[in-house]
Image: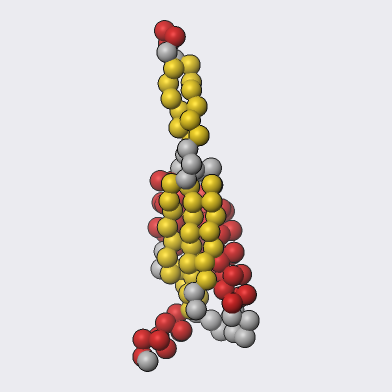
Length: 122
């Protein structure tokens, strides 16, 4: 059974967040956490927190199964654009440049690999 976690309005551009999200897509949860632990990008700790939340949500749904016995993996992770703060920056000769401060929404789904094999066989 899959579980998901959603984090909205993260003040990072979606493009920067997608670079880190692409690294953990399809990985086992333990490997994904190890990858995120040592990434220098500012998006890595945020994504790690979302991953831990998804694992905790999976534990809530599957109280009878031990986390150590489950083969959890990152089933899907996608980053959508969020709201954009629009600001003005002074420019030469009385003009103004538009500054767009982007944000994003993260959706992360974890699933049990052993449960996937059982469903495919049935």
